[in-house]
Length: 197
Image (cartoon, rainbow, N blue to C red; front, side, top):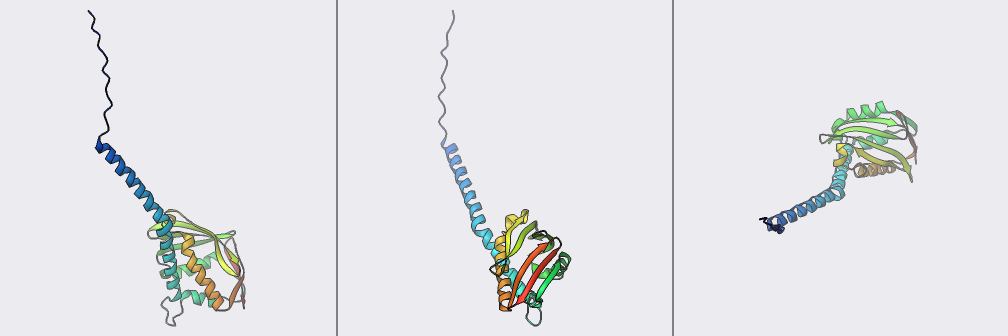
């Protein structure tokens, strides 16, 4: 005699409340992380970058010399009228001599390449390479397409960092009656033409 067994249909187990709760918390955690990353990229990173740029301007304004003149005002005042050629070696020697003014930048090496400049730097224990062009716009010196690659670029936005420095440089030129009429970069050389207004 043959026995026939009826196949047992198993009912799917309803998901436990614990699994559903865990899934809900995981989803909430992911959204919180997305919100934190967005807040960092669109609010905190630009604010931090501007703050570092503003602090750099303050250090360059009064660098501890006895007459109260800082490196930036002194540098602008010392620019002679006419065409001036500055080599990348001269720029790097100047940066090395004033390394204490560059804090939080621990190290910076400038390379002048055709149409722009590259700066290998180390700050906050991170490294990066800054790349940008320079130009004149309405008589003002501006940075073109500034970007910072590498781990340091994830922490700091170069465009936001340069804004206060660029603004102060142009204010000093105007206050001292100086005007940049030509500005270009060739391999190894920065060429600037200054006129007194």
